[in-house]
Length: 406
Length: 158
Image (cartoon, rainbow over all chains, first blue to last red; front, side, top):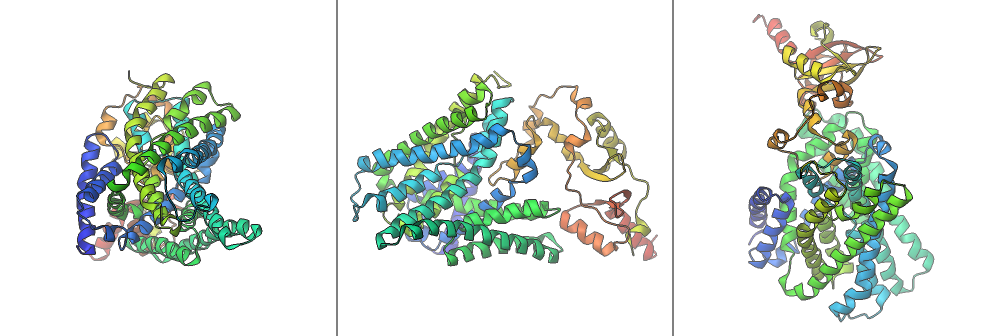
């Protein structure tokens, strides 16, 4: 099968998968992923295409996702957020990160029984667990709002939930960038590199990504003066996202973080910035249909025995981490008792950013051994989450007495 | 040709305190798509499009919803969702223009040329742009129809 035919199949079948998902009240992205899994199971798109030349779609889609997430971080809106949202968001994200990492480290690898060539734990298993933990931070805003809307929920729990999910994806991107840097540093420690170098390398990566984003963000503001039509503006915005992703790859820094910083600079430093994001809407649907259907195609039934256990651990660790983290954050910020008691139950939906980061991680050399298992585990955990998250969110809303309908 | 030659100097504008009920009546009467919002000093502080009225169906804080709308994979409500939403009748007086307006306003000046304004309209998908002076005071409004009318007049058609 040629590359263009594969892309055509991904887009068209993904599109219809999205329509079916919406009809049965699931997020569009779930439809894309399920179609991708079916394409993988039926072996319609050859594996060498999925893991080979189609990889470029991942970089482009994640560049756009990161840019949009950066654009949601308007400082004027952030300042209006209640103190409990600012406090709970990092705690619930860190909770998920720590619990998932610990569960995978303690139970996961023993249960899965991997026989890796290098038995040195902190240079093989630990980096992978840290990255999977970081990927587990994200919460899906679209799925959450769909449930809130369905039950006409309103009140302190609902407002806090909305605020946390609005910020959470940005945290997931930062967590992922830090996790990958830590993982790389742990791995290079094999080569007798000093502790100073191990600590300074992640810092240089993060600061370099932020600096690249700042430079390209202001560059984009300057270049936008030359765009007199929306099509011209799309060329400049999309071109800058590609430039950023490509430069970050060349420099070995985080393209995700850099693109998020570009979005952040545009929303906060440019007047009349609406077009800088709305022009991307013209192309994001086709790229997301392509990307998330492709993500599903990474699913490998052959590794499900191992991946299934990891998926369950991810789900359990994430549930515990979100619950404990939200409770600690709520206690520190003296949030209302309904927020303390029930918010953790409502933070479980996940999909887009989680899957995106998993696919990106798979392409990293760090995951050369465990990549397929990790992606299949995360895809399976997304499907499990689709089933358990809505009833738990509903439980939280009803227990908090914030549902507008019985 | 400059904006000041063809702009309308009599502008239907609303205040930040204009109620939703009054706002809907003004939209119904004048059939404009957008209305500039001015403060006590006659400075333009926002703009309300008639679709902004739909924000009243949104029960959550607008600053959070604005953040969420910008996140990728956001799925907009469908029109049937609005039909199913209950809103209290008193919202007509409780909700004011300030709650609904967009503060990211595109404006132009009297000295701008028609070509510049057309470019601004095309880029931002607008058909009416408030005209302001250096201190951002509202001095007029220019619409795409004003420009078309002026061109036809210049060409001798009218």
